[in-house]
Image (cartoon, rainbow, N blue to C red; front, side):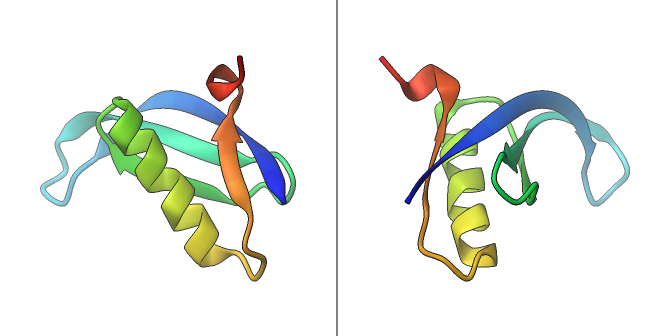
Length: 68
């Protein structure tokens, strides 16, 4: 199933406690979230993979800006 996600840029904290730019991706179906350092498309795709690993279903995640 294709599931829409929201992507939010945020300041995340690394293992040393330093702030790093990143993304938080939220599934609009179940509200699960995944975080990745960086704000590139690769970081967003990594979050989609993390969401898929968390979910019991085999969903295909996408962000609104992927459409069109």
